[in-house]
Length: 108
Length: 341
View 1 (cartoon, one colour):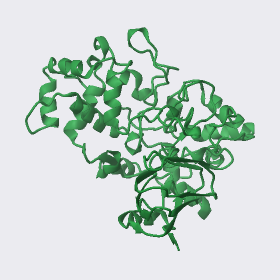
View 2 (spheres, helix red, strand yellow; view 1 turned 90 degrees about the vertical axis):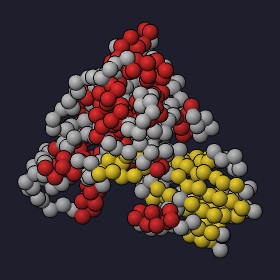
View 3 (cartoon, rainbow over the protein chains, first blue to last red; view 1 turned 135 degrees about the horizontal axis):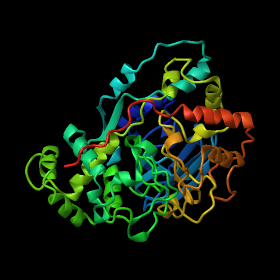
View 4 (cartoon, rainbow over the protein chains, first blue to last red; view 1 turned 180 degrees about the horizontal axis):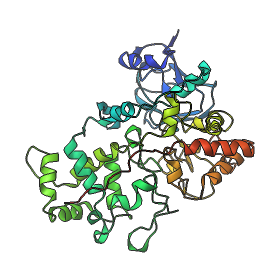
């Protein structure tokens, strides 16, 4: 089951921030230079899909020890995915827009 | 630290309300109105909850900011390279540093930094407090923190100012408190109202037709608003804009991320007519040089921002862009330099 964590309006971001999402695969949207959610509780092997619904490019990456990655430049309209490989906490950022931050807590 | 900010109301509202013009309204397309509304000024400054605003801290920070005794041989202040009348830059390609050295990058504006996330052209620190501590000990001012404290303790007039700004007993004259006071002051440095603001608020006579056309070129064909967005005319983002040079910029901290090589922080465009020269290396002598650089699209390389592309601007569009940028220059009272203790 794909659990969408996209909140269509930017005004919903604060609400999303207060409610960690649990279980399943996840879709994270990028709108108005924000992630649609700031916390995700997930399991190893879950898939995270990053959808750029913005008008500008993003560059999602993580320096986390558990699974460092760099998705590179992501143009508006593009969708990129990662499969969670290990348990632990991952800080996800946009290299271009440092205000964009997301924490994924991964359990086995 | 910056994630823990709170919004703290200041007298910006007064700046906004007191200057409200008699509006000459005109019908505006709803989609255009939506774009224009993204440029409305905020009413509050976001301060750091771990270093909240107080009048005493801001006043102390202002004195410290302009006091050349903080720097090497009592001859360099923050304001040496960040001059209010020069858009908080210094008008030089690269500032002279201490001991005969030259600063590696152009002096950037200090206006509207309370809304930023990372500081310095390369984003190497995440708070204005950390920025100040690095700057005072760096090549520009060359004052180690222990020496800074010693210098300030030797100036009798500072002791009561520190005591008021940092009540509660204990030693108040510390490098950490210097950084907190200056950071609070720097967060109060907000670009003043300009003709552009009056236009955004409905005064159609506030700017010329050329400037209005330039605003739409800025938001459309010229693609400037991809990075120079919001009332600050920056989204705090990092880009390689295709200038020559070996400086890795943000890439020094993010070595493995291709798009961060030669990437630098997008500066605010408020008061941009005052802050020549331009770019992180000061290589843009005038605003038309800057416009021509973006028109060409920059050096093609893997790290070049995907927002960069050859624009094909006409001379008329370039002229309109310059007319628009000129409307971002504040018209209010200049910043006062304080009497020093």
